[in-house]
Amino acid sequence: MTNATTTTTEAPRIHALAAVTDAQLQALSDVLIDCVEGGASVSFMLPITADRAQAFWRHVAEGVARGERALLVAEDAEGIVGTVQLVLAQPENQPHRAEVSKMLVHRRARRQGIGELLMRAVEALARERGKTLLVLDTSSADAERLYARTGWTQVGSIPGFALLPQGEPCATTFFYRELAA
Image 1 (cartoon, one colour):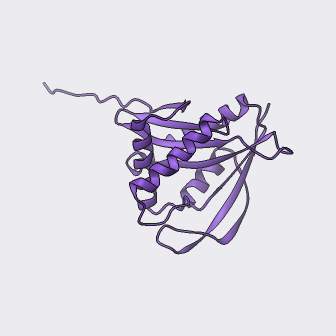
Image 2 (cartoon, rainbow, N blue to C red):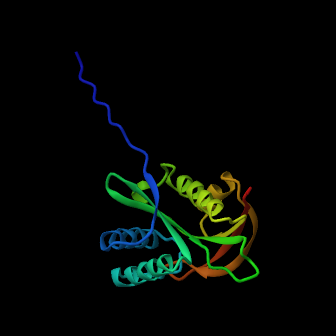
């Protein structure tokens, strides 16, 4: 007789944060640092310090409190493993539009569908907020594949638009997605 053990892996919980606690600030900083240290071009250069990451997330939390952006997180049994933002504050002539920003997934949780779950959730939130057009940009080939697979339209790439965390120039690809009302 053999003993079989079954491990149940729960899907991560995706939810919006109305405010950011100190513990969430630390967890979000850990995700950002992990992504930058893993080579992601997400506005930060190496070395990235905990203070710099926490200052960024405090700024994001202030924007959430003012209603200028929404912050979604993905949490598994160990805590926050991913995040994405919806930048709602747009110019007066673009009330129908929002920008998807800083879609980050910790390296320990990649290839588990978390990026797709975050993108579906941010699109649903945009619809709830009356947005009919979303835009984003990326310098990641993996992210490009995710966005194309989830129905985003690639507009084009600009070579040398940004720098990778180590300082090398990289292209940035722009995408949009029209949302049904």
